[in-house]
Length: 429
Image (tube, rainbow, N blue to C red; front, side, top):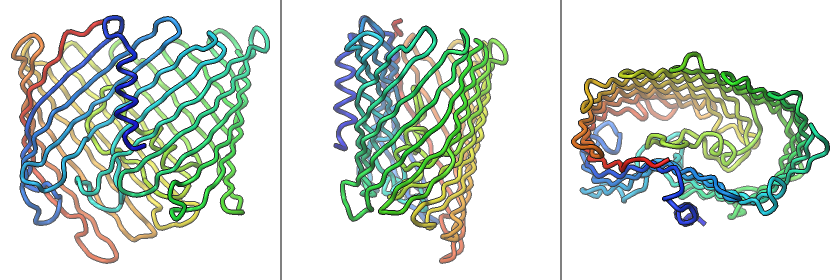
């Protein structure tokens, strides 16, 4: 099951004739030298060689709709500090109208990397492939000119390479939707899920049941979606619950800038959180901050993103806050705050540069563990030819933290230098 990501991604790609699809692909090869690849107080240096693939394929023709996108990188550790790994993320979705606009079969695949132990440092020994595969039908039944009944069913498999928290689930939902106008709609939603672990020793099976109302409006420049309700958890004979709130707002401030806000709280598990968080099309190669646990938890979250792009300059700023409270145990209760900023500049038709920074603070209150991490990066790209770019990147990162067991837990300083050659064929639309 852990290989489903590659198999499904390849199958979806094979199903999309590239000559008939919007295609954007980049392949790369490069090397990176780190003076502390293990991220320890006295870590060792290491050089990695890598090959990468970025892709964005979008097709809608007849009854078939397919989209595959992401950023994957295969890394080989030349001095054998760690085993070779595949980093990055990939999101794939395909749907086929068995009965046009009435009965649709959907296949979805999300692949990324998370930390097997979220309290330990982010290195290749602690990163794990995380995969969420799901498939099932979407049914749409008109109940009048403005009202629709939607029925959805999914069978899903969540796979975690190292932590052993693999689980499968059967989900279903029913939604009554009514158009309030040409741009807005309201809905009443009921859903349920049964979650079972592949290894029963990781925890008992449990059920999640939710009821909510929703509202959405799209004015062209602004999009707003609201959902409010309650989720009940039935776990080994015990029943508990928590609020369900989701609100997202996106607005185009000008022709070149936009802002998006998301806030919410939901009772779910690592697979639900990973589904919300995993990188989308063209995402950076990074470790997803999803908390991996073998128990359901209440997740509160808020994020703010602003971006502006001009003919020569670009700026993007993001702030993210999240808190997770376990339903069975408090050991992994966590509060996390993160921020990112990226400034890019096109100096000439051939030269482009960027500066970026990240900051994260995590506090595991019950484990008496807290740590801070920050990094700064500078990159310079030279367009050698019409489709070939040579890039140089410098990165500096630091971490520090304390626990009840030891002061200086997770302290490290790391410097990296990377050189990469990238080929981008002319995009087809």
